[in-house]
Every structure is written in structure tokens, then in C-alpha cells.
Amino acid sequence: MNRRSYLQALSALFATATLGSCASTTSDKEERRAAKADKANTIHPNPATGFEVPSLPEDNLNFYLVSDLGRNGYYEQKPIAELMGKLAEKIDIEFVVAAGDTHHFNGIASTQDPLWMTNYELIYSHPDLMIDWFAINGNHEYRGNTQAVQDYSKVSRRWIAPARYYTKTFEAGEQESLEIFFIDTTPLIERYRGKDKYADAGKQSIEEQIKWLDKALAASQAKWKLVVGHHPLYAYTDKSESERTDMRKHVEALLNKYQVDMYLCGHIHNFQHIKPAGSKVEYLVNSSGSLARKVKEIEGTVFCSSDAGFTLFSVNDNELSFFLINGKGEIIYQYKINK
Image (tube, rainbow, N blue to C red; front, side, top):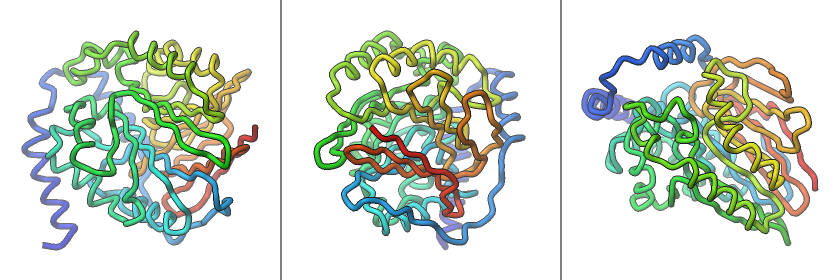
């Protein structure tokens, strides 16, 4: 059996066994409408032909931001994963930030679920991707066993998810540091709470997480501060406006209060760089690493693209840069913050 047949067999096995056990038995018209809108906006890929390598200072801290990955290697997932590995051969990538929905559809059932192989281990198999992956839950993980996302840290050396929300500090340059605050956004959004399909969401305390984020940001000594969640505060999307309203209600004041440099997320399956009027915080929506959706500008849009891909970050004492890279290996946008 060749590799493609092996992946298809595992995928079929999971679809008929594990996925069936996780599926909701209740009718949900809103979910069906949202799924139909997502399908209508989906962009199907053309194959990659090469890639661009940005010129970066040798001592910079470099890392990838990825999200919305899990398609069993189909569509653009495997080519983009290979591109990430090839670029990492040229640039010293320290770690990967996985901003949710590593597993699409109904999440995962356990740490032994075959999807860990078909969505992750067999796909991101390049030697230069055998680095730390700092992960959070997305809304699709909340359809399955969310604790297994954390527990997989005990199975895989590179998968790091010590809690539903946590913080990590890195050296960035000769004297400064970067601190990343990983938050769990699905429980912050009311439309997920109280639904059988997202059973764990309503069990999580909004108040406790927001108190933690306030305290963690207040204690930070890092020059550079990034907050990472799955859901956006600002974005063009057909998804319910209540998602962004709830996110802004719970998170935006803290981002402004502690002068966070950027809020990073996924969920929308396209690239969007947004800076609302009067805001000092930059908002970046990272595209899907497998299958993208249509996008258009909204108020505050600096750049947007319906390409699938990933983001490369590069940070030093006085400069934070990011590069949006599509599935063809093209740098379609780059931006720099100096301070």
C-alpha cells in the first residue's frame, strides 16, 4: 500500500468509526447555514512551483504561525507543509504557533486518534519541522475531546499544550524578549456555550480566563507582546457577528491597556491584516494551511488575500516583521513594526 492509499484508508476508518461517535444528534440550522456559506466561499488550489526566501538578520527569532490545518493532507495541506519545511531549511525557525483547528470537523477523540497521524505527524514530517509546536484549541477541537489536545503533549515531543491558556517567553535579539499569550477563545463566545456539539465550551469559566490574562499581561516584562487566539476580534467573514462582538467585549480592553503589539488568530481561512481606527494594536488573521475562503476589505483593512498559506514572523530588539506566504511560496505581503 502506497502512502496516499494508506492516508485514505486511515481517513475512511476514522470517518466510519470515531467521527460517527462524536457527531451531534441534534439538528442545528445555524451550523448548517454556516457550513454552506463556508463551502460557497472556498477557494480550490493550484500547485506550488517554487518559493521566496526573505532576507533576515542572522540573530533574529523566527517562527511560523499556522492555523486551520486538518484536512488529512488533502487540498493544499501537504504541499504547504512541505513548503514550510523547505523554507525552514533556509531560515532558522525556532518554533511553530498552531492557532487552533489543527483537526477539522469533529476534533479528535483521544491521544490515540488516527487523525493525529493523518492531520499532523505524517503531514508535518520534514526534519526542520521537528521543533516545538505551541498549540491551542479551535472551535473544531471543541467538537471532540479537548483534554486530549493537552494530553497529546505527553505523547509527542514537539506538541506543546500545557493548558487551555498559557504564556511563553522567548529571547528576541541581544537584550529584549518576546512573550506570547495563548488564549482559549471558543468558551469566550456565547454561541458555542450550552450546545451539545461544543460540550466543553460551557464548562470553562470566562471570568477565570480573563482574570488570568489580565494578571499575565500586567506581570510581563517583555518588550514585544503577542496574544494568540483562534477567533478574531476584527475580520471580514460570513460567520456570526456575535463571535467578534463577544471577543471584543472580553479581550480588546486588555490588549489596549497593556499595549499588546499584535493579536493573532485564524478561523476565517484567509489572510487579513486589520488596524481599526485609533487602535495601537495590529490584528492579523492567518489563513488556512489547507483550504482557503474568499475575502474582501472592511473598515480598517490594511491587506487581505484569499490565498491559503502561513505566516513567518521575525523579531529582534527593535523590529518585529511578518511575511504572509501563500501555497505557491510567494511572499504576498510583509509588514514591519519598529519600536
